[in-house]
Length: 416
Image (cartoon, rainbow, N blue to C red; front, side):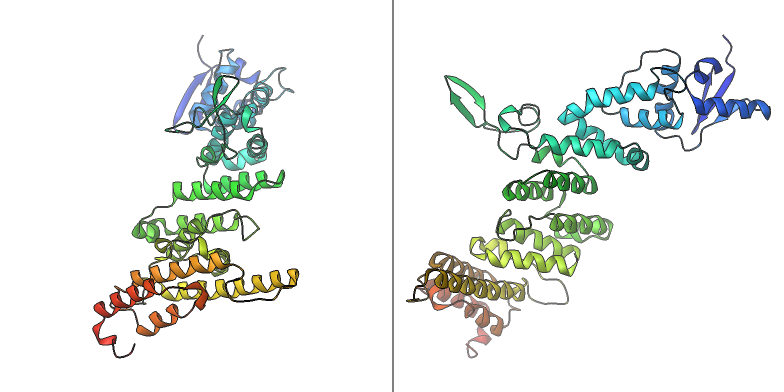
């Protein structure tokens, strides 16, 4: 049959027939009537969601051709059907109804498909928000993170690449044990805005272990943040990296003493400084780090300075962390003593292990920064004296650091 309708979508012309199209689409009915009055043959669909590919699927449905929906095309097709007003009022069992059945019975029942569909909403975000597709995907994903790990197979087994699976033997049968954070890696596929919304939904649905949240944020940060200083601070990516870092900081567990390792928090602080993150958020990180500074390593503390400072590493920041840690530990010990109604015998009665760890940490840090020819002797001395005597029962580490400093900075000998 000769075509009697030309539908223009973007740069593509579709030569079609009015009857099958108009029997399914209320919008095409109205546009065709308007064209008849104005003696126009072409129907134009400006700003069509999903473009020509989505329209083609809708057109095939109108012709009774079997269309295949999947997680990759369902969002564009749903938005296109909404644009064309393919509702039940026009025809029973119309495309919108069919798509909604597919979403509810298939997509939202699947962990993997829910994530894929949520990813595809980014190109049609306003439409997807209005049609509640984004919210339903987020709810589907968040709900599944609370499943009993023993029932999880689709993500941990097929998506996560474990070199040596941890297996549990029970009644003579072997099966892979699934950790509580089985969902963490898959969610890294989402961009930061959607990731934030999903993780917020996860936390709002119930009490979730802060360590799992910390692992999720660490995995996401390591996936998307480069370890290259130049790449992080480059003008091309700085805005995106800044947004990413600030969002991750805002999602940290409310309990400042739990959830994230000190090593990760220090790396996050390094990122925050490089991208120029908000000062309030950097202060929050410093507070968290100072509480658990005894868990850090020397490499964690080697944070480069930004110009115009001339030293290689930010010793002032480390000095601040140590000062805060000392104040926090002394306050904590005072509370413990008051609660136990005991007398303090020496500085080593309580928290002795944490003092020793920080003592070794600072002496190791001093040995590293001692190679810097631009390090003022005053900074070296101040940092070496910032920890109590009980944190340094032996002085071998300090002597080593002083020896290195004097060899690298001979003129400073008289000052020491």
